[in-house]
Length: 114
Image (cartoon, rainbow, N blue to C red):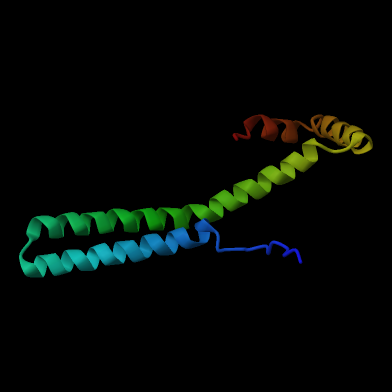
């Protein structure tokens, strides 16, 4: 009997990373508080600063994710428009040429910044 290899599917690193960073920041913050209680001020300050850096990284990732996802969606849409098959590409090109004859649209397209 030959055993078929089972497809294993784990949790993606990008799903674990934000939670791991939060947990690590919490651990360093609590360790810093414990060190301060024990009177080891130098280590306490270092641990609390490191916890703050980790917390900042976690917040940055959470803030940027929606922007990155929206940018990728827009890039995919534009890629589909640019790579249309032959009969549709001609129609697209004629529509763009006709649209550029409208002064307001032409001015708007010139002022668009990517």
